[in-house]
Image (tube, rainbow, N blue to C red; front, side, top):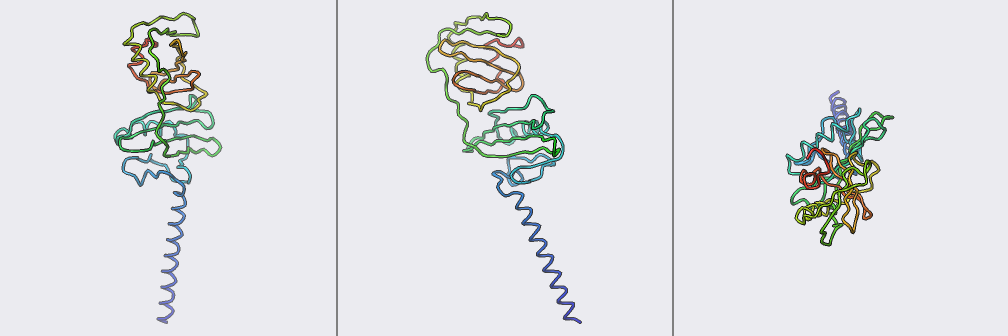
Length: 238
């Protein structure tokens, strides 16, 4: 009798160990292939409700805007600086979402966080990844003595000429320091044009989201720097 009790106990223990091993294996499979696991870092928080489901994290419902604002508020507290962000203009379209790039001192790579909501599954998918440092290739490498700024090209062809060399140099430095961006189909609503003589740059801006520079050289993006709006006067807000 004692033998059967002992044998039963051993079987139960083996089943528990096997079940625990299987559970742990399944859990680890969810993390397989994830470049960054926020809950295993000290400086990248995990938005409440996100669950690993390799190669992304998921949560039920449409939460991409909340997730964007969460990281926009929390990452700077841990030393991260936003370098670039792109977000859908229509929150209700299928696949609407965002992508943002963050840098941190003494960190040799760039943190990218993206999210998208898919209607069919009613889930928001979030990706965390590492990428190379963002490129800020200069577009204007010659001295500019005069520029022409058209604040509202959709209403008028007229532009005002600026000849103050110090102001022009500051504008050039801001544009040259902007980050090279990937092709973006939907720009911000505000638009102006700056003619530097050697290059014409279309400026798409949102006072809260950022600034796109578009020219024959490609596309660049910059945070909505107050200095740029004050120097160029392209927005009536400044």
